Length: 503
Image 1 (cartoon, rainbow, N blue to C red):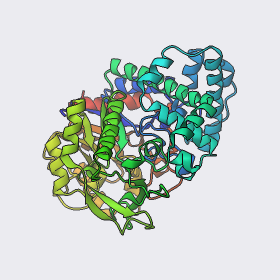
Image 2: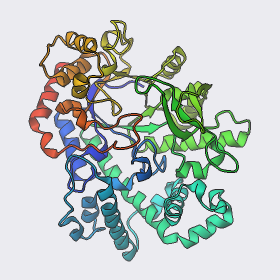
Image 3: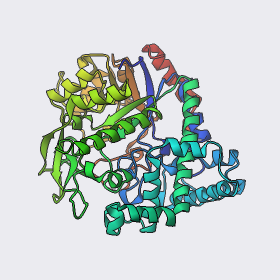
């Protein structure tokens, strides 16, 4: 894939400003597109858009579906504009924080708003295009029934449901659809609202020359509609229906004991032809869905297609895992044959072998270069811009998993020698704004695309970090207040992007 030289901002939708306690797809998202366009930015990157679960800290990397959109991102303002929500719900809003998503307060309020919109929808006999949407979204029936049953089962994971429902006996499913038909329709309605608002935002971005970079995790959560609907495709125990082996990574930069993610693994090597076909058809559908939603997609943990770290589900950490060969190039060959062009960015961070690099390069996928990793060794460090072997890569000052650049620089965990190398590389000195040093290094590189987390553009510290890998609680909450997105900040970024030929 040939990326157009340019730059962009990494900011998840939940982190957008707004009055409703969480970023959404409404006016503030459109205003952020305007900010990007005025700042000369060609790309907006964000995290997965999937429905999240409070039981899993609302992580977008452990979603309830690989296909559905997160109802928390539905804009009440746009619902009201469309006549689906009484205006009184936007009056006297709770006193939500500008700086953090308080999920404990936001979720019940948002559910109340969405329930009110559904009642309007029901009373008025539907909405334009709803039936067509339901017919076209082939994944929607399973997802909506899964969510309705999950509510009925008091949010217990599906493998703890009554056996007939957990194992998807047709009679039990048919009875569930009839018993819960209104709740099934409710969840269909939420997806209709989400994708209607999303396509409006996508069109708005396209009109202003901003391309959207989405994100899909290679794995899905064990308690998800995907695993429930296609159990034979995952490493599940035939009786307990729980994973026998789970995903993770060995000890690395982020953790001395590795990371035990807990996602069930795919049965890539099943000898049953029907399992392989079901698994590959699920991936084809997944790619079609994401490419109908965004312009480019980053695959999180791309290396898992070459080989993946298999951890026994009984293990407490990831140390006891082993590498297992993945589906490799043949998988992408089949996907491309069925779908066509695959505009993919390969997240190739962590323990990367020559075999992973060979796969990435054979497919022509750009990899990732993270500047915070560039200064912890010598001049041969692969993340230093003078060592980029090709323009077909994306450089980041940091990612959602990193500390902010300012936080990195002032952290006691970062060696003084690394900070000294960074300053020397930037031709800078102690006391200079380190985030702008990193931004200029990224923009000046040969990498086709430079992506800057918004926290780095604004020079924010560790308290604005989005995620700390290996910590189960307290992540995914950061938000930006609208007053920080000033014309001055945008103009400075535009000037720098222009200077380095990214406009």
